[in-house]
Image (cartoon, rainbow, N blue to C red; front, side, top):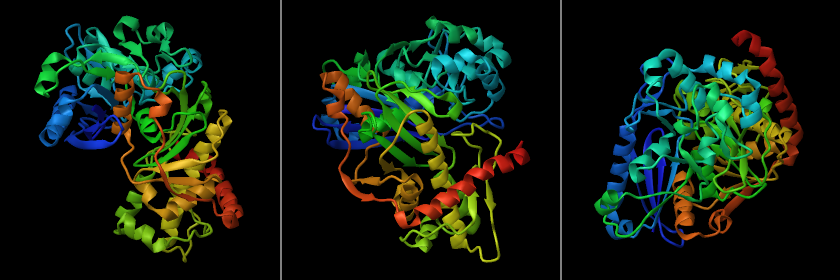
Length: 484
C-alpha cells in the first residue's frame, strides 16, 4: 500500500492506493485560516500535524490492515508558505501562506533586481516565499535573527514524519530562491534576502527518497518495516502526476476557485515577463509552465451571490448548446489578476450592458470572461514556447458542459473529460510514494485517466468568439488607468 498526504489550505487529505494504483480509501482533517490584518493569511504549523493525524486516524479506523501495509508515502502541499524554525526546530511564528499579500512592497523590490527573473525564470510575486522573509526581516527583526530553517508547508509535515529537513524541486521553484534550470538553490538569491544554503532544506527529486518514517509513528499506525517518504510535489505538480500530465505537450485546465492552465515541458522554457510560471516538475529532468487566473468558479459564485440563484441554476438556464457572444463582456478580475497582467489592483467589470441584458446574458458573459482569461493564459504559454493541442478539464467548473464548450471554442482546442475518479494531488502524491518505494518508472506510473468524452470547438462560432476575444483583450488597458 502507498499513502498520499495532501496539505491544502482548508484541510489535509490522506489517500491509500494499492500496488495497482486502485484507491483503497481516503479521509480528511480540517484546517482554518487566520486573517489577523488586512491582506494577511496565516496558519499554525501544529494545526497541519493535527489535521494529518485526524486524516490518518480516519483511514486507520476504516482500513487498519491496509494502512499497516504502507511501504511508501508521498507528500503534496500548498506552495509558497514561509514556515520559520529556530535551531531546535521550534516554530517562530505562524506560517505566512501563499495567498498572503503583505509583502507586495518587498516583492516589487526583489523583482526589480534582474538576477531574480534571470535565475528563477519567474516574476517575484507577493505570494512567493522570498519576499515574505524580506518582510519578516524588516518588520519582525527579532524573529528573523532566530531563523535557522525555512520550510514549505508540506516539508514541515515531512519533518514531523521523518525528523529531516528535505524539500524537492517543484515546490522549491515557487520560493524565488531556486535556480530553476539547474535545479539547485541559488546562493546569490538567498544572499539577497539575508540567508544562505544552511537555512534551506536539502533538495531531492519528487520521485526520490526524502526520508524514512519515524519508528514511533510507524508503530502508532501498526506498520512494521521501513517506510520511504518520497520527495513529493507542490500541489499543482502533484495534481499533474495524478492526471498523468507529465510528458511534453500534455496539459490540463483546472476550473476551481482559481483557474490554472498547466503544461508539462521536456525542457526549461522561462518567459517571466508573460507572468507564466516556469517551475520544475516533480519528475527528474522535466519542467512545467502554468498560467493562473485568480477567479474562475469564484467569478460564477460571485454572480450567484448577487443574483440569488445557485451556480447550477444559472448554468442550467443557458442550456447545453453554445451561443454566440452577446456583446456583453465580463472581466473576471474580482481580486486582481496574475497571468498575463501581474496586476493586484485591477478589478472586474461588465461592459456593453443594455436594456435587453438579462440574467442569462450576464451568466453567459461571466462564463465567457473566464474562458477568455484562460485564452490569455494559452497565448502567454505560446509566447513562452509551449503549444497545446488539447487539454483535459478538471475542477468543479468542469461539470458545466456549456462552460467546457465555451473554453474549447475560445482556445480552439478539444477539451477531454476524464472518467469518474479522484485524480487530484493526494492521488499524485501516493503515486510518488509508490515510485520512491519501488523504483518504478515514473512515466509508466503517472498515466492519464481514461477519457469519458471530448468536447470539440464549435467551428461555426469560432469567428464570433475571436471577435469577442478581441474586445476582451482591448478592455484591460482601457480600464487599467481607472484602477491604478
